Every structure is written in C-alpha cells, then in structure tokens.
Amino acid sequence: MYRFFVLSCMALMATLSACSTTRQSAPDTSIKTSSVIAPEERKLAYTGDAAAPRMTGWHHLAGRTLEVSSLADLKLQDKEVILSFDDGPFPGRTDKVLAILDQFGVKGAFMMVGEMAEMHPALARKVAEDGNTIGSHTYDHANLSSLDFDAAMAEVIKGELAVTKATGTDVSFFRFPYLAESHRLRAAIAMRDMVVMDVDIDSKDYFNTTPVSVTQRTMDLLHKRGRGIILMHDIHKRTATMLPTLLSELETEGYKVVTLKFKKTPMPNNVLASADFVTIR
Image (cartoon, rainbow, N blue to C red; front, side, top):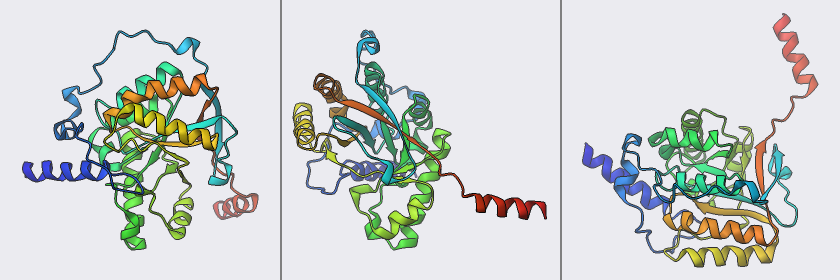
C-alpha cells in the first residue's frame, strides 16, 4: 500500500512539472519525491536566509487591490502585473515564495491543486492567512480537454472543495491545467461564482533552465505587453530562486503588483423579493 502511495505521488509531481500548454520540457530534477509525500510534522519549510533583514518598509512595488466578479472586470492598466503561482502548495518552496512576497510587501494569486492542498493543509492555510488570492487548479491536475463534460466538472468541483477545506476560505478563482479549456467548461465554472484566470505572460519556469533565464524571459515578454498576469509555479526551486530578482526588476522599472479580490455579484432585487415571499409563505 505504501509503495502504491509513493508511486501515485511520483506520478502526480511528474504531471505538475509539465503544467503548461506545452509539455516539451526537461524534467525538473530539483523536485524530490520525499518532500512531496512527507507529512507537515517533518518541518520541511524553507531554511534559507532566515536572519535576512526584512525590507518591506522601503519597497514601493505594491499596487492597488482590484475587485472582480467576472473576467470582464479583470482589466489591468499599463505597468500593472498580477503574480500567479500554480500547482502548490509545496513544502520548502511555497513557504519560501511567501517569505519573498512578504519582504516586498506584495501578494500573489495561488492556484492550488486540490490533492496538494489536502497533503499540506497547514501550508495551504498559511497562503490564505497571508492575504493572498486563493484559486483552484482541479483536484489532481487533470487535462480537462481529455475528459467528457461531467467528468471534467467533477474534477473541478472536487478540487475546489479540497482547496476550500484546506485553506478555510472560499475559492473564487480557477485556472485550467495546461490551459486546456472549452467555452462550455468556462461558462459552467463561471456559474459557480468563480473567475477563470487566464495567462498573459508565461514565465516557463517549468523548463529545466536557469533562474536567470526565467527572469529574462518574463521581463522580455512583459516589455512587449506592458502589463499582464504572470504565470509561475511555486513547486519549483528555480522559481523561488529567481523571484527576488524578478520583483526587484519590476520595482526598478516602475511596475506595480495588483492584489486580486473576488467581489460577489449582488442578487437582483426581484430574486430577493421572490425569496422573501417564499419565506413568508
């Protein structure tokens, strides 16, 4: 049984390391199976520069909070970016990302895989408690385009419920694994009061390349667009390594990091009146 569990975890991480519209990348050998399946009691948290000075006071990278109830509301101005992280939470990586974001005084949008959130609920709660935006990324990173509609929605709902339970907060954002979507699925997810997160700038941090290359690629794409949602993954060591440099470059060039917040759409008055009428009767 234990062997089956380990093999299942290895299969899951192999899938996560290929999270993109393309899977033509070398495997990320920095991910160790033992750190994926280890219980949280083993304290696999980041043990890097714990004594490094906190620099929140003089940073000016944080931008506005953008409240959205649908994708149509998600409009960024020039020099505005959203930092999004897929596939976690992952001990030793996600917590390091959180520490770096805190140093720069900014928040990210974490699209969690339900199975990962179940395995590391304390870390998932930490992401939410730090004030970051919480989203889901299906339960086990399934390619929804390979499933029929009912099976795909079951995977979406299972992931949403797992992330909600682990974080203790509502899950109001969603991203398709591999960005493999359909109009029908997008509409169905929107009906669940969830905003589908698209990608404007793919850092391709899942490629087995250097942190410097990831930073350069991201900034080059950003220079062409001028704004956008940046896709990264908090399961990769190189992402945490390159993040301080990326944030420093964004700050130097005058960009602002936008914090996302979900805004519930008010129920129409006629619906409320009908509900009151039924209650009175």
